[in-house]
Amino acid sequence: MKNSLQVAGGVVGAIIGFVATLLLLELVGFGNRADPIMSGVLALLVFAPCGAVGGLLLGTALARRLRGEGNSGGLLRNSLRAAAILVALCAAAGTTYYVYAVTTATPWLNPNAPNPLLVFEVRLPAGAALPSSARDIAAELQTDLNTMPGEIRPDLFRRDDDRPVIAGQVQLAFRTAHRQLEIKIKGQPDRLYLIGLSAKAPHTPEFGVWQANRDGSEIRYRVRWPGQD
Image 1 (tube, one colour):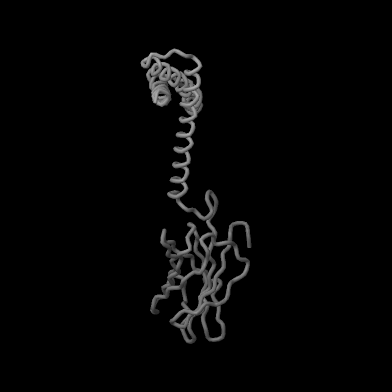
Image 2: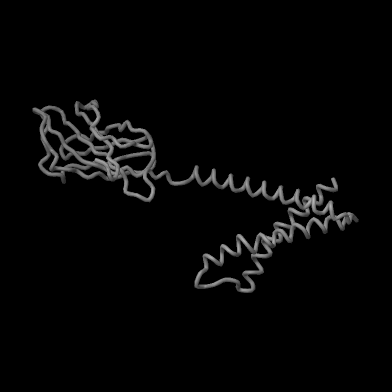
């Protein structure tokens, strides 16, 4: 019980010493306005920890004095215990923050770099009219995280026998396994295609197989990552 009170005093003293040092530095106007980042680093990683160490020793000593003890060996031992608890608390706080940051971070598919592209072709049912202009077609990628308008590529339009084939591409911004592509063609019913990619959507050099839709149209697609063909 005695040791517990002294360790608790050391922990509380360290916290007070850390905060008090930062407040004191703020009050005295510590810092270099020309380099505020370095000033902040010095305050957080040098001066404040020194204040925490001083507060830890002072808090442990004060708790021992209140209990009428004066053994310096016990002071050092309990101060070390308080320091170990502080390290454990900091590690737990850091781990908690890291888990929170990872679980709540925006799941960009290719962070700090251009987005990969979903390149697609849609083969319309036999007898369907090939749109005369890209302005008559709209493509939209829909996910559980966002929607993204697609780019229609009329230069890649063609016919497979009596079936028109339209082509386009759309950016893949987020990691998610829930993707679908909506195609709207003027004068025709809207079409919705499930996109069977994994969340990470790896690069695929070739188109996949044609996948049938219930209206008689078909879609095939591939993923093109930046710097790859």
